[in-house]
Amino acid sequence: MTIREAFVWTEKKINKADSPQLDAEVLLSHTIKKSKEFLFANPDFKLSSLQFSIYRSLIQKRDRHWPVSYLIGHKEFYGLDFKVTPHVLIPRPETELLVELAIQKIKNKRLAIRNILDIGTGSGCIITSIAVIASQRRSNLKFYATDVSNSALKIAKSNARRHSVAKKIKFLHSNLLSTLPATAYKLPSLILANLPYLTPSQYNSNLDLKHEPRAALVAGPDGLKYYRKLFRQIRNSPNPSYPKRGTPPLSLRGGREGLLTLLLEHDPSQTSKLKFLTKQYFPQAKLKFHRDLSGLNRVLEINL
Image 1 (cartoon, helix red, strand yellow):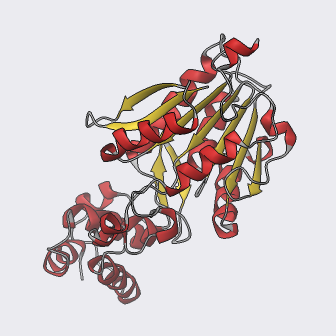
Image 2 (cartoon, rainbow, N blue to C red):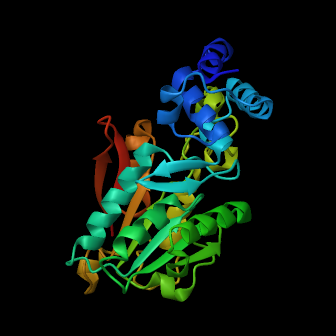
C-alpha cells in the first residue's frame, strides 16, 4: 500500500473522527518515521507489510477514541515535547495560560517569589516548562511538584530529565500539599494547580476522554472536590504566615499582601461557584479571573 492509498483507506475507517486527515498524517508519519512533508512529497512511497500492520492497529485504536497523543507517546506543550502515557492527562493548549501567568509573576521583582509549587503535576508539563524558562533568569528559585500517583511522578521525572531540569525540581508523592517539606512553605510562594475539575456527567458525555485517567479529570458532583481539599490544607498548613480561619489579611498582620499566590485552572462554568468557595475559606482574598484564547474564564488567581 502506498501513502496515497493509506490516506484513502483511512478516510473510510475513521470518517467519524474530528480530524481524520490530520490524524492520518500524524499516525502515518509516526509509523514510517518520516516527516509530514515527506508524506506529501512522496505519495507513491510503499509501506512495508509490517508498517501497514502497525498503522492499521493505530487507526483501529483511534477509531475507538484513543487519543493520538497516547498512540504516538508524546505531546507538544508550550513549545516543548512531553512524553505521555495513559497514566497521565494529555496536556491541553488552554493550560499554557497557567505557565504564562506564572512566568509573569516570577518576573515581577516586587513579588520576589522564592518557591513554585505545582500541585497534581501529572506529566510535569507545567512545572517543567516554568523551570526551563524561569531558571534562565533566576537561580534562587525552588521548584516543587506533587502527585498522588507514583506512575504519574515517573512520567513527570522523565520529562524533567528530557528537558534538563530534573535536578531543579523536587518531585514528591503527596496528596496535594500533605507531604511538602517545611522549606516548601517559605514565602513568597506561587502555587499552581490544574486539579481534576470535571463532573461525572461531563466526563461520561465525552467519548474522547474515556482512555484518559478518570482520577485526573473527575472531582465530585460539582467538580470542585479537590479545590476544597486544597483550600483546607492551605488554611491548616504548618506555616504560621499562611492564612487561617478568621485571620485578617497579611497586610494587617504586619506582613505584605500577595506573599502567597494561587493560580488555579478550572472549567469556565465554575466561575461563580469557585469564587464563592474561595471566599468561604479566605474572606479577605483578592481574586482575579484570567480568560483563555476563547475568551472564557480559565484560571483563577488568588492573592492572600
